[in-house]
Length: 356
Ligand SMILES: *Cc1c(COP(=O)(O)O)cnc(C)c1O
Image 1 (cartoon, rainbow, N blue to C red):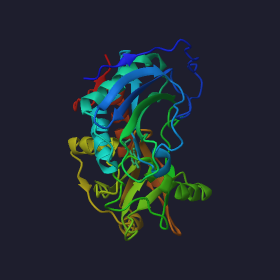
Image 2 (image 1 turned 120 degrees about the vertical axis):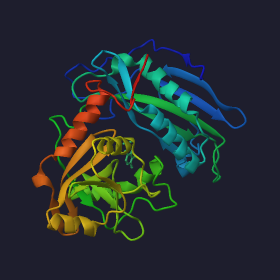
Image 3 (image 1 turned 180 degrees about the vertical axis):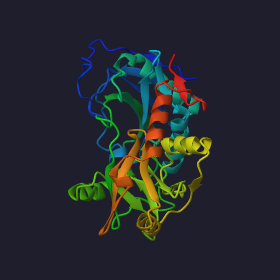
Image 4 (image 1 turned 120 degrees about the horizontal axis):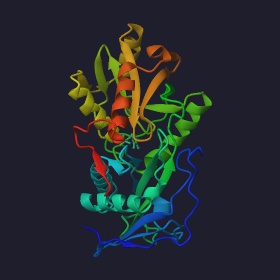
């Protein structure tokens, strides 16, 4: 149990108005959670303070070798007016898996969840309520030692910032076009593809720019060795419905283990759909597309929840999926996950966590 000191701002900011377009990650609330780590002392000085710039030495290790991690989850206003999180313990567990890989000290799961709840509670009035909106929660950890040597830092900062965010799809679910990248790769087995860390994103930008230039909204990565098997999309895991079966790439070590991915697998199994976590090759997709058995493609991630894919491009092949429409399972999954998040549907798995 953390002992969190709270220092409220004396200069609250103007909150966005109810009809203001929020976009994503551009507006920040009045407060943030901060906690220090010092070798020998552990995590200490948990506090909620006014949102402000932080000051670090230009020699702080994070700036040079990228020892950092981040998480992403959302807080919602439920139909009952209370505030809710979705499976925050999963973000806490994944934080520790990422931390292990990056030699960052562990944070007890209860402390992580307590910190998220506490800071969201302080800025609860910032949770937007228009359909599809939410308060995006961004926990992150950075290495702060003033040292240019290559080694794990002995000091860290754990910070949580909050950002009211707009509906990912302002006018309802909309299928996206995705570029299957055959030149650059994101991660390899033994690397840090399963970890939520900035370095993976730094490695991805060049392909993202290329896909945008070609008129596609996101990149679908192939495995780093053979460039043959599907891995995941920029910030989403990927699912296919092939001949009635829900198929998603297995967690191989180079894929981010998405919480939305896990939720979708649970729901599909619960509905009695055949589900397979296995290798999926581009050739299999092209063949399934050719014989008409590639029925749906969708991405899963906290930001969009479910993102139907209407078009996939691989080299000179363009696959149009479900006639460019939203597939039946994609829509049902979107309605179910968001329904559970907002408290409009029963929560048989106990995924909703109330912030009291
Ligand atoms: C965060 C993330 C995802 C999605 O994970 P969720 O827990 O469902 O939000 C997928 N891929 C990458 C690379 C990510 O960083």
